[in-house]
Length: 107
Image 1 (cartoon, helix red, strand yellow):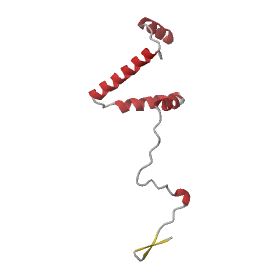
Image 2: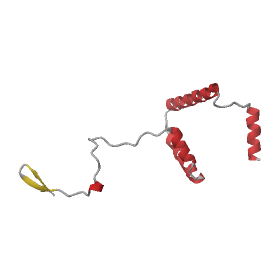
Image 3: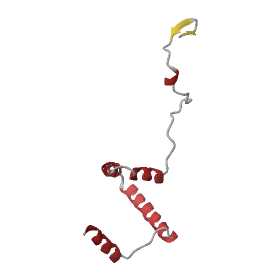
Image 4: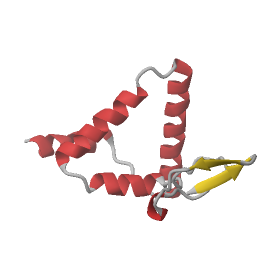
């Protein structure tokens, strides 16, 4: 294909139509954000070894966060759990019951 620019002809390599990318107006396309619940559901469908590898990768991603960020994250988790209890979404159990169930699971 020839293009004329300032009176000079330039040969331009022709790209097959299926290989052309749509115009993004200078912005890079990013995938739509996914909900945590959707990602978790999908992750739980993985084989055990793959789930373990994913868990390790996620845990490693938390290494090196600052003490302030760690405290902020734990506070957010504590608040989330409190809201679940207050809303009745989860049921609390006495510590003795939890230990009894855990012992029964491993024996």
